Image: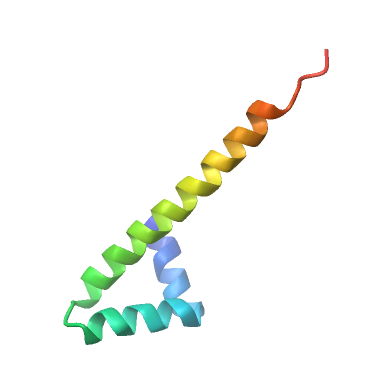
Length: 63
């Protein structure tokens, strides 16, 4: 799933394109740049999941 998100962002998001271009200019391969992009996406998704979980836990269930 992370790979599909990374490729989708790479095709559409200018900020992502700039990031990958910068990593390649630093001497990394395109695959290494995508790997680091996937790590970034994983951290971002984890944060979203944890915030959602906290919201669910704070919600009271009406009986």
